[in-house]
Length: 303
Image 1 (cartoon, rainbow, N blue to C red):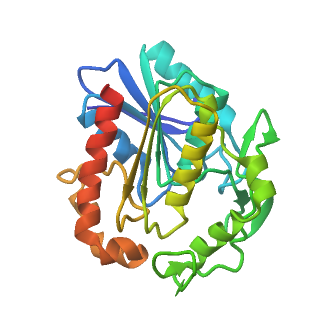
Image 2 (cartoon, rainbow, N blue to C red):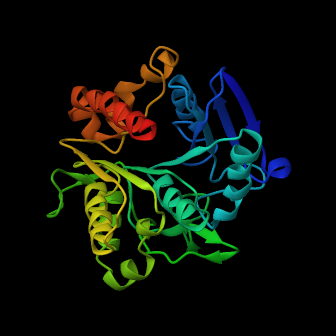
Image 3 (spheres, rainbow, N blue to C red):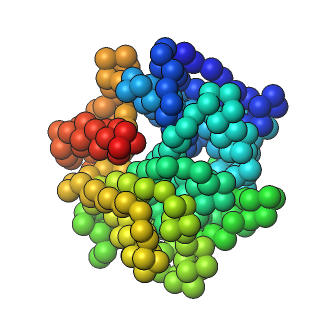
């Protein structure tokens, strides 16, 4: 496997590439989170490379030249990343994969920059949110994303009073949820802001795969998937769309690192079960969903 690192000062973006030794005519731009995320994007890029698909994980924040937190992250920085894949690696078939907050950027990149064959959204939201400062609690007053220096319309989910580890009952939830889940749920009730900020997946012209768990611990991902579906139907979207909702499914979903290569990471599963309540309660089901969703994603890209 061939690996390559990129930094903002030299390349216009921060990222990590994993390429099969024999090369590939397919590539996936992987968008997950910050440079120091618990689940590093390079591990997902390497997993795509295991299947003969070049993976380029692009970091959103937390590196030199990038915002220090999820706040006003420029969509523009994906332009040189895509140019590298097209012009240097001569990629013909390009997909974009967004997991969790990365789903916001996956849609925006496919919408504003374009040229993607596939858009894959895992545990997504259907709107951009207000950005947060470095403590991830203080709201910035700006969008999490920008295009040409201008804020992308956003919805405000006030995380300043949230205690992420405190679970509570909620009338609209299928189980006890975190305060963070409730904050995002309540943000969706601002219908005027949601309508203004709604992501326009119908403008991507890509084949769209949507994956979510119905007991997502972080935000109501199933609800967002249904909203995206509804928007696509109203727009008479004429490309392939597939939705997968996992019963008792967690926020942790989609492609996961190679289990044999990342044994140390998988030894953390008991701790993950404490952090992600649904995963802890339904561990075997969710481990099976990892395998199932991986095959769904790879098959979708290979079609």
